[in-house]
Length: 419
Image 1 (cartoon, rainbow, N blue to C red):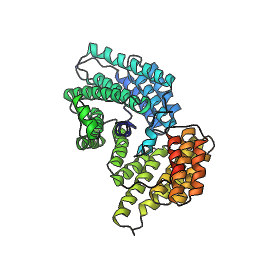
Image 2 (tube, rainbow, N blue to C red):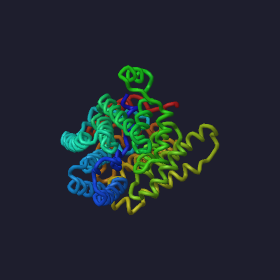
Image 3 (cartoon, rainbow, N blue to C red):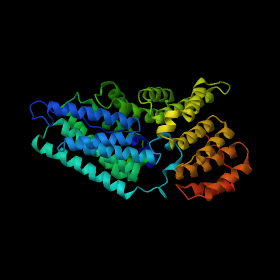
Image 4 (spheres, rainbow, N blue to C red):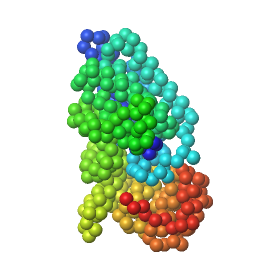
């Protein structure tokens, strides 16, 4: 089940905002709400631009300024989760696009200190929302916070802790809360992002797992989930870009690559310091070209050329180098994957090896880069060079199931899977 859940809960940023319902005492005064909104915008834009320090600063100030409002601790938990994904390279959705290697948990355990900090923050946020509901049981904003907190916990449990059924349970609770919100206020479209994501996630499970999930009360629909999220991008008030980010992942899973690329380029323009959007757009362009090539073997593809140009530009981008120098291991790796998809195996191998050689490259990604370089060299017919790379994998600390894969590669040349 993990393959099908992880890629769909990976990138949602469950920010919660709203206005107290008329007739109840306001949770924040108008002046407080204005200050909150300034801090929210600053923190949100920083988070989308991968500037975690600025985001944390804004959210800490928010928590201090509004100690009875759950946004501060929730947003701090949110930024902690997203930064954890980024540091472990899980924020790049296509790293999980079809290769079970990245799902092995043998050497990929969550940091207990991070888990404890996350749970402390979400507990604080939940208690504040529950205290509000004791005074105002039908407050849609408080219910929205509770649902968003449960959704955030589900995302963390799945993407960081790999607790798959716990994630389904908390995800279901989040949906129940947000359906209550919609009943109280049908115009509260931001609540539908959780409902749509959950619908798609459960609807995407393989049939045997879906049957088990159904018995446990978990049901969904991919088609309905996509339609709901598309609606949030049009009608949502605060989480439109979060919904667009999700659609990049989901469109990619559904092989709607052109649409995924278009959204990726839009968000890259809006958040220029977030190189991940450019990577996602380039990935989608290459996949789209591969689909077209399958239909017409002799066609050349402008989208493929655009994707390669994007990778080349990222590797030369001074802003990326200044703000995210460690990103170059990932950029080289993703460039290698794109070249592999295009059948340019020798060039792909060079990019994978370049990823492993980036100063300060993440250890796990460097190991996987040697493995992928070996596979690319096998596909290029350079078996001797491939064997050298497989041995390089075995000389490194084991991550995921890299050693097992390398041992298989030493016994038999890697062959491209037929799709």
